[in-house]
Amino acid sequence: MIKKYEIGALVLRLVLGITFFIHGFAKFQGGIENVAGWFSSMGLPGFMAYAIATIELVGGIALILGLGTRVISTLFVFVMLGAIIKVKLAAGFMGDGKTAGYELELVLLAIAVYLVVCGSRLFSLQNLFGNKEK
Image: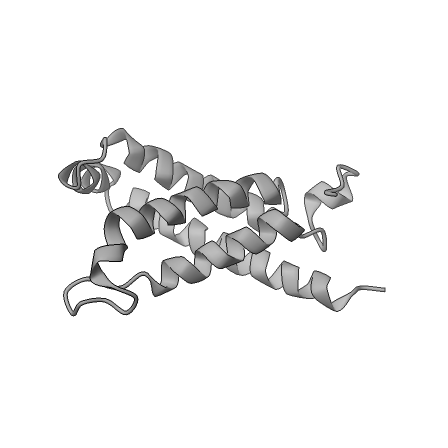
């Protein structure tokens, strides 16, 4: 019998995975060099754009498939903390009219923290192949 919390965790895992996959894909599709330039303009090393976009793209796919949910979600926690602190915090929760606020990043951070703590085994390839999360 499937428990309600497992269904909830599956929904969170899929939404987080899809969201990060799309964001990572958009970074590559829109020109990762442009994103690297934007990172540099904020005082961050440009190569971090490649790392973040790869984490988002590959990590999103991994979450959708249910592979390494806790590890990938931990990476997403750090990505969201960096985005909030470095980019969004100054604009406030809802934004300042020019820059979007950090409300979306906070929601994604909360979902990622939940998945780090609780995992998500329902319909996951990791669970299917016997490498069960604790």
